[in-house]
Length: 114
Image (cartoon, rainbow, N blue to C red; front, side):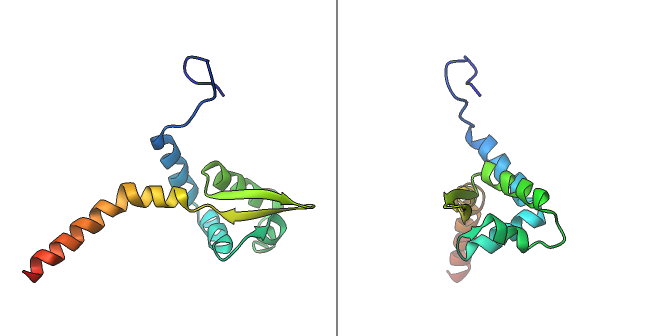
C-alpha cells in the first residue's frame, strides 16, 4: 500500500485503527480468542483446538483479523507460531472513549460527597 501521494507506505490514521479494533472485538469468537491468550501465549494449534466446532481455516481467519487490528502478535518458534495478546489497542480505545467518562463519574461522586 502507498500513501495518498504515492510516495510511501500507507499508515492508517487513528480512526482507521480504532475501526479495526472495534470490528475485531464485535465478534464473540475473536473475543474468546483474546480471552484465551490473555493468560499467556498459545500456539496457533492450541487456539484452534479450543474451538472444536470451527474448522482450522475459520479460526485462522479470526486470528488474521485480530492481528490486523494489532490485538494479537504472532512469532515463529521452531515449527510453531506463538500468539500473544497485544493490549495497546485496547488501552488506546479506553483512553479515547472511556477515560473521560470515568473522570466525569468520579467528579459527580465527589460533588455528591460535598
